[in-house]
Length: 297
Length: 251
Image 1 (spheres, helix red, strand yellow):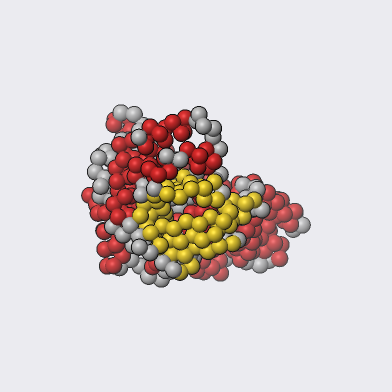
Image 2 (cartoon, one colour):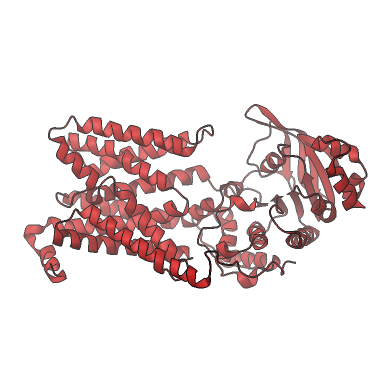
């Protein structure tokens, strides 16, 4: 299918779900791209995974009760995020063990709940792998609103979030409320996941969070650039992914993720400074630190 | 001279264990004080208490006569280098600006005063020329100076340094030592923990030996003549290489 035909399908009123899917996929990948920068830089990938699984029981409840999926996922995800933040204050157990406990439990709860619904196998697959059909208009508004909220909060708290990510102890010493900011960040990750689950699916949403940000990190040493590149990469992949999956009848979530991965691999090899080729040309993987120490006073 | 940082009879329990007991120490304006002691002696606990991050079970910590509390009184804190996320894609000046986050508060963005403070801090540690370089590309000594600049960005009267020499070669240590001494002699109170005897004996105006409580407190050359306090602080015998090193250094 040529791009022109794809545009034609997008404008075809009989295929009204298609532009909606494109809109939601693009908005989710933009939001996930920006939030993902923190997830990647702070090594929180596991938390992203946990939250992605944890929204499942909320989706299941919403599905069974016929409520808004976005809302149900948000409630469940936020509860899990708060539980992780609170329980990880206990230093006897490491954070990853706590996360392991809660996200599998949440996922299990989701499976039990959704098994009560009639015809659950089909809807289970839809949750896990995403679907571009059947996105209600109401959800588009909710996704747009939540996306703007997430980006707005990230913008307002930018310097605080950077400060606590660099080193928590110094941030505490300055009187920056580290625990609350951590919590806010977890909740923002949750919201980004929730708005993306519908199109890309519960399992693949982690890729939307991690891969664009990781790719962007390979391409730049500037945080601001990274936070623009990551959503751009995500949005481009969403657009291309939807086109490819629509043209060849591939699953949308899987196609988007594979495109993102291809982009990541390309950056890994070709990135101007961090790429394999650039490093090979400079001789050895270690780039030398700037100058010496001979200028202290 | 007035004590800028005054720790008075401080006792701190951590999880039921007595980490610091009845410790008293003062750091005056213009002084570089070295805090020495074995692992687990309570050095870090004492620093964290001075920052107001731990509440003492007894005793008080005051800075310029006011009770220590995070964010309320500017204290420059320089953590160990490995506690900082160097892989974060920020330039040196951006890293130093994060030192102002607490003072700026939630709504304000950096203004002229903040950039001026960052400029001064960078010039003070002689990192001005590298200011737009990515922080992750720096060597160990440069990283240490960036962390010092970040602490100085707050324009504090008190500077607390946690193990600044760990993992650095001798020439770098000497340059940093000189920097810390001049930062102190310009009128700041500087307290630094270290395991490096030579650097401490040479560089510091005064040494405090800590093992749960303050065992000794005095000028480096005086303490070097008193092997007994070192044996008590570090729990070593009279034949310990530590004492021999000390004698060699102080001679």
